[in-house]
Image (cartoon, rainbow over all chains, first blue to last red; front, side, top):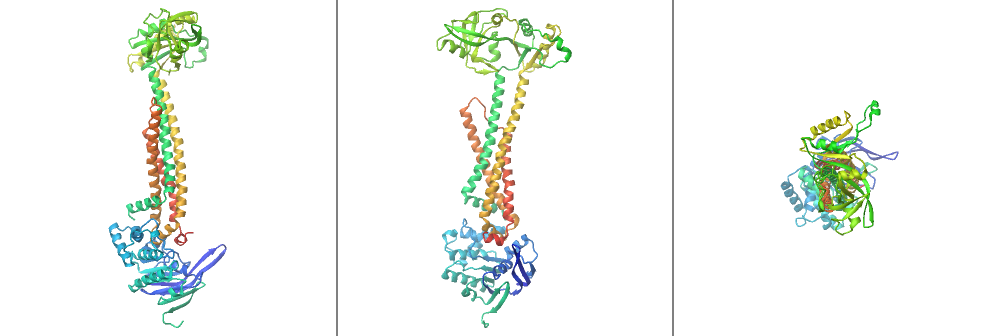
Amino acid sequence: MIKLERLSRDFQVGDQVVHALRTVDLEIGAGEYISIMGPSGSGKSTLLNILGLLDRPTSGRYWLSGHDVSALSDDELALQRQRNIGFVFQFFHLIPRMSALENVELPMTLAGARPADRRGQAREMLMAVGLEDRMDHRPDQLSGGQCQRVAIARAMVMKPGVLLADEPTGNLDSHSGDEVVEIIEQLNEQGITVIVVTHDPDVGSRARRRLVLHDGEIASDSCAGDPA
Amino acid sequence: MRLLDTGSLAFEALRRAPLRASMMLLATSIGVAAVVLLTSLGEGARLYISGQFSSLGTHLLIVLPGKSETTGAGMIAATTTRDLTLADAAAIARNPRVARIAPVTIGQAAVSFAGRERDATVLGTTATMLPIRHWTMSMGAFLPELDYDRSSPVCVLGREVREGLFDNANPLGRWIRLGDQRCRVIGVLGDTGTAGGWNVDDLVVIPVASAQALFNAPSLFRILVETTSREAMLPAKADITALLKIRHRGEEDVTVISQDAVLSTFDSIFRAVNLALAGIAAISLVVAGVLIMNVMLVAVSQRTEEIGLYKALGARRRQIITLFLVEALILASLGALLGLGLGAAGVLGLRAAFPSLGFAPPAWAVAAALGTAVASGLVFGFLPARRAAGLDPVVALAGK
């Protein structure tokens, strides 16, 4: 599904070069459930951005579903994101002037889907996250947990193979956070590859495979049940 | 993305930023309204001037003494121009292309009645002056029909002269003193104001022979000639020039001008002025365009996160450019329509305030204003749109 080969990412900060990722090799199979943990500045967000095709590696290769995506143009990357990747962000990134339903429709709207098609699809997604009675509410009329569930519905409306979640519980109380994690786990059970970046050890330890980054390198890569 | 969806996304974004949207609408609409109003003013002035000229009389020729064209240096010795005389006027009147003529002498004289005295412009002419100039009478009658060389002690007063000498008393039949002569008031001119350079209200009109006696001068100031038709004007002009050349011993020492020549000169001057006005107003549209650009740039930076989200969700560069351009276009078009409305209201207001002036924006000005508004929206909307499309999605999502 995903294969990274000697991938690195440097940033120029003033006249210093910061190595956010150093020669990372990683393989993720379809349907895996992975958490990426590590202290601030360890490179986990950079890794997630590259996995999500929002950012490009400085060097190395990235294969997504068998295609080399490390040398695609901006518009080709946008197309890949649209088809293959769903994003869930810490701060939800819902559009405040749109209803929950319209927010969920948005990826299909951008893709040029017909209104009737996308409306039906978006309703199904909102029902799947338990918000069938909140479809016409705007984000400011929803709780944080409900907003994040809308965001998950939006991430899945194009039926991507990969769900990338960047601190999905970081802005929620523990009860809402649990609900969100449960929904994400249900999606994984349906065969979606789930990659979660988190600070929270409770959330991170629920994943079957746990990746710990340190100074831009993979410090550990363990599976549930392995000795720590 | 579907066109309708692009439009509704852009429209919703505007609807949720009413202050921003209304600022840009205001700027554009003021620009368009300025073009409409200024060109209406110019057009109104042009029509007014044309109207003034045609009120001087239709198919009118004016004969003046002296040659206005420059002549060769050898002519200096022969510049003893002959005066225009009543005999010349009578000869012109016999031409079959001429419907009627009015000889004119003019001068200043003191008028007095019962101890009240004032200066007035004395116009010596004939009964034909009234129809040629389309003057009206407010009371009494105009000059009687007399032979050109017959004087008569009668006069017709302009409104101001009548008020100055008689206040509201009835002047008809009264004898007033005019220079060293006395004459009886037989009529008062209607409220005509200024027409063709003379303040009609300040005139004392007397028979032409009386005026020649008063000023002790046999020459005429002008001869107004009304031809039988518009087509007759050019041949009549040639006839008169030739006739007077013979009468003045072979010297071409008069100038015949037609109302048309003056009118078309004024017309072209006013068209130029109007174009200049439209140009000045168009600058305000460009200023509106710059404002649209700035406000759109602010909008782009305010909506950075949203743009980042669009990109994360798979929006391509062109989609984001289109989205912002459509926003600018919606604003510019609405602003232009609003400006047309404002301009139309202003024109109606002007018409109500000055009913005698025909205020109306020329069609080309309306089209140019709308075109410029929409074009400046597009041109100045492009930079912000491109900036939005060029944002790095990672940075944009972080809201930096």
